[in-house]
Image (cartoon, rainbow, N blue to C red):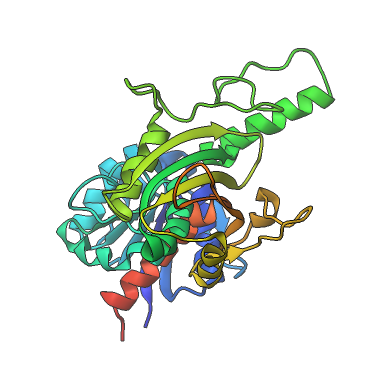
Length: 343
């Protein structure tokens, strides 16, 4: 006996990926519904490679009564309006937006890192999915933290345009085409603040009073909530001209001694991680290799001689998968195993 599952925001990049991953991982669905905004009502979308076609339903009129799990990929506005409705009708919400992440009554989950925290979902019947850049980071930090206790993290991200949705990817494509096939003037940027093609932009989300951006703030507070509130973290988040895959350069300072070899051995066996770390040309992972893959790839693990007990590493991950859709489906699997067993 399986579950009745709703995907909200099913026509967006992450929503479509959720459908693909549910099918790919053979999540036990007796029934699945694709739901989106009124403008998408009636659109037909595929349920992975199953050959099954789903007709999109209107979120404004959808009744969540009798449904078990709703995966939300529709943004903060829709989550604020419709997630409490779904939760009150007995459907457990797994929300990909930022709206509930820092709510103390909503668990913020990465299954490889803090699976036990899911037991608190009943307070609001809502579970939050972390920011894409945070998700891959904490998967890497967790086993190292368990081994040597992390004090401080400095991270610089190199985030793909798919993190800004289809409009971000389209803007990169159109600007790139304009450079190579100039027909009149290039359109001014609309999704990003500057040209993204052949450029990097040190600005993701809005600026805060302290000079950091909200994306950088999210990495700080979410890492503390998921992993350990005592960890000090500072981030610089950068948008780069890549379609899929976020990369991060991570500098870690530990309380206890840990060598690069020890870290490699730990990461090689850690859940959700693929270590590719050969000290030779091409012996590391890049976004091209991680696109379409479920693992977070770790490379270039080395000791930092400028601090006691310091390491530096590089990690990349498909932000539409582990950073969003895959993590949400993994949460649903965890929820099923621990709380919603059917049978």
